[in-house]
Image (tube, rainbow, N blue to C red; front, side, top):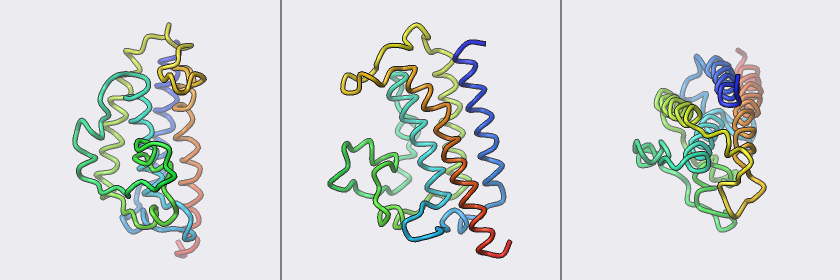
Length: 180
């Protein structure tokens, strides 16, 4: 097994678990917040999928992001970036959203959000299968020389798992709060 196959296997297993966690959740459930500053499941899914789209298509390849290529970004209203956002792209993934921006944002319908996640994943796997492993030690961004291709693959192999733990926790709190 080479590194590409390992990453595909890792992200596939994690995605299956994520989808199992959100199965049966309603649109209202995607919006539920444990506290005013806490992220709801809908945001966590959106952020997970957007970061995957960004990393695979902007940093690991030269392909256009699925969000732009397929028009998802035109369907969804995003908060305006706040003054402290380091770069516009950063806010487009939800990374720099304030609690108020997150609270004001409404995720797209669950089926649409999951469809976007599936399209990103299909495209990401294509990027991975074509990835030249001889480039692992190179840095695709001159502004971040320590962020090598290997770094991005590492990040992507565990990013969703981290947010999956948050989703699991939020769903548990929600079910306990709602008596289910």
